[in-house]
Image (cartoon, rainbow, N blue to C red):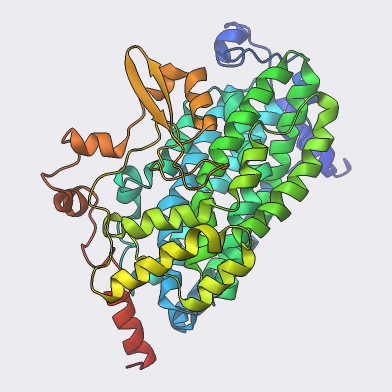
Length: 499
């Protein structure tokens, strides 16, 4: 009898030995994007996937995880798990996650399925296809986890429709549209490395830790279930970088430019996570500043020291982000507070205890720049003059965030940059976003900017109320506006028997 194959031999047969030489078509025609970006691959056989996972093993592991995951979902639902969360305000973080993050998992699935076809190396193709299946599983489990909350709270019902249309969700949507419109190697650096390896801990760890601290065991469970997948994704991202850098020295400046770009775009996207950590969690885990110091400055710093031997440097604007960690969460929550009437979740003024917590976590900046603003907002609300911004904000052409970020050397001044291309002027929130535009202006002049589209009459109307109700499908006064007095808060008090 033939001896049983070990995992390494089985993996070789299911990947490397499945490839073939083309007899009736030129290999360049079969993989037209492989040389599109200037990347040089000399030997695809050097690709190494440390997990060497075969499909039979993959389905076995995933099936075991699914059984445990859905058993917990059922128990959570049968025991009215939504009544165990710390505070109804917490549910708004889930609304932001479902509308802003979960659809990105689906975009990642589509992206990896596409680029997995474009690589000439079989090992890379198999790894990408497995990650594509992972990403599809993630979006499904996230939707199932939050479907329980949809029965009891407003704002979950049209997450996919909102993702494609709502102004602030254009930020994460444009991030993945940008990556998927790039070539296959840039996509892998953008998503596989810059996001999955460098920045993913700043997304998943705060969200899942926040869920645990606030009694949301359904979200904690899908987070844990996804973590073993994320370990593979991070390994794939690191392998991609090392493979490209080892293949040819001409790849180094191209990869460095992509790292600079996607580090900046990724940190701009994570602004919503910073805001969630500092303002949206009733029971805090850690501040955004602390998370950045642990997961990027320490862990990321060690990573880039390791990559230095290939000629890779720290991302271009790492020093700027080190300064911005003191400010971005406060500036972002202020934008949403003042535009709360146009958001698909509720906003509120931090309590006195929360203001003290922020003062403790940001001793050099919060009391100086941000506490006076919240004290004034509190006074206005007490007089029945709760402040809402009536005008539509100017947006950054690259990241599509409203122009609310400040100069780091003077946080009292809003940061504005601009470029002229073909006679038109484009505006940016930072030097990083301006640099990205200036490198590929033909791409970013096509940005679908929500405010511009509203003014052009492409989002329903007339009137902002019609845009919100007809185009965004928000239940005005229920999905949005202040948390105080909202249907979510009223139902919560009824369930809890609070007067």
